Structure formats: structure tokens, C-alpha cells
Length: 356
Image 1 (spheres, rainbow, N blue to C red):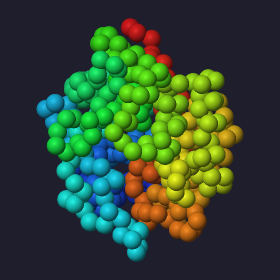
Image 2 (spheres, rainbow, N blue to C red):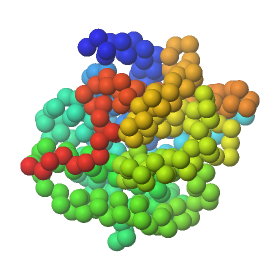
Image 3 (spheres, rainbow, N blue to C red):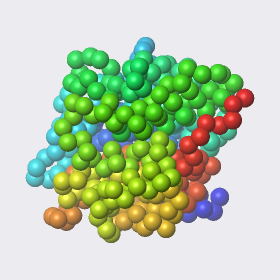
Image 4 (cartoon, helix red, strand yellow):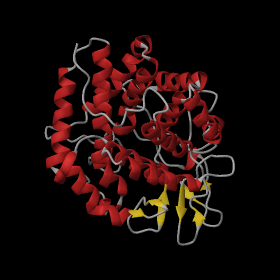
């Protein structure tokens, strides 16, 4: 309890930022009147859950339960479509100017991760029972977009999704969400052998068939998430993970600053830095994980919320925004490393729980 209170005080500004951006309907947007997607929304909900903000956590889950589409997905918008003001570095415009919403498979799958995270904290089968129809519909939507080769298309086939492709980072995240979904089913004594088969197919595709991914996206290898997500999600481990980590460490990691978002820009992002810290912890590199996380702490505002990123050559925050999911990513990393909550092993353990 003392440990929880210690970190709750440390993260007060981060939590306040998340709550400030939560709307009355429970949705948590990137910025005031900004874009929404269910993945980043749920990242923020999990951070609230770690510190037992029960009202706000419940609002967040209920919003997704109530807004789920009939096919199991949610509409979401791509943050990359938001313009940034060149003068002051803030997000320009509002959600109505962010382009048509899409139905992203990774965004939809993440509900299972958040629900499993809640179960690890609360041990509430009642909550899992309540959320099970939502989880099942979401995973059904996701797996309806899996090919016979194992990869999963990144978004529903409609006019809003310009690329017919599977993305390596998104599929790695889905892999982790599938594990969580199967674990939720196991707690409820529901057999999902077809989901296990899909999980195996997806893992095999990610590990051994890289040609199936990112076929229509230019220069995808420039993104750091494509580098560390196969490790973070548990698709690869041991020596293979060690080799992969070393392969691009100097490309993406800037000492004492953090992890770049893209290889060709002098720009570190706090969320990527936090996720890389979790990845290091997962690999048993606790001192390195703590060091990486300490670099992220340099990029807090005076109230304790985290800036999105730092352009280190110009020595400015860029964008000059503090999305709630940025602070949430740091909170989840702290939990993984310093064991704040009962869900601290969420991203550190990969296996399915014992079947009933």
C-alpha cells in the first residue's frame, strides 16, 4: 500500500492529465476535442486502473461496451492525420478535421488486453462475464481479417482504409491481445481452440514470414516500434530477441535522451521510450530498463504530465502536446519494473494460463 501511495503521488500530474481529457461519456481523446481511438483510450484506462480510479476506469470500459459496432469493431481516427501548427507545435484543428474514421483490427483487439489487466488487478470474474460479449465480438472482428497465411489485415476493408496490408507492429500487438483474450476465456471456462490456432498462425507469420507485412507502406523499417514490438509482444525471445535488440540499438536509442520514433529524425518519443523500457525488463535487463525509464522522466512538465516527444537537436518539445496515452505508457512501464500493482507482469509474461 505504501508503494502504491508513493507512486500515486509521483504520477498525480499524469493521472490528472488523463482525467482532464476524459469526456463525460467516458472516452479519452488525444487532446481536448481531439481524435479518438480505442487503443490509446484503453492504454489510459489501464493507467487509471493501476491506481484504482474506479469511477473513471468504469466509465472508460462502459464507453467501449456501449459504442462497439455490430461487427465487433470501433471507429477510430489516425493521429498521424492531425496537423501540427508549425509555429507553436500544438495539434491543429479538432476531431472533425482528422479524416474519416477507420475500423482498425489492432485498436479493436486491445480491449482483451485491458480486460485481462483488470482481472489481474481485481480478480473479478464478474467483470469478465460482463465484458465477455464485448471481447468475443471484438476478437471475432479481428480474426475475420486473418488470411490463410496467418497475418491480419490492419483495418476493415472500406473506403477509409487506404492500404490493403498487414502491419508488423499492429500484428504483434494483436498477438498479445489474443493471448489475453484466450486467458479471459479460460477464466470463464470457455474453450476457444480456434483462437489458439489463430494465435499460432499469427506468431508463425510474424517470426518466419516477414514478406507478408508492410507491403504497401514505404520505409516502414524506419519506425522503432517495428524493431522492438516482436520482443515486447512475446513473439520472439531468448537469443533471437538479443540479436534483434542489438541490431538497431544504435539506430534508435539516443543515450540519456530516449528512444526515437523514426530513425531519420532527431526526435525521441516518451511512449516509445517507456515501451522499450518494458521490453528490456522483459528480457531480464532490469538495470537497463530502469535507466531507460529515467530518461523519460526528463520530459515531464512542472505538474508531472509527460510531453509527447523531444526534438533534441533544436532542444524543444515536439509536438508541444501531452497526450494521455503518453503518460499512461510511462505508468505501465513503472508498474512493470517497480511492481506497483497486481498486474505488473502483464507485459512480462507471455504464456497462456493453464487450461481448465
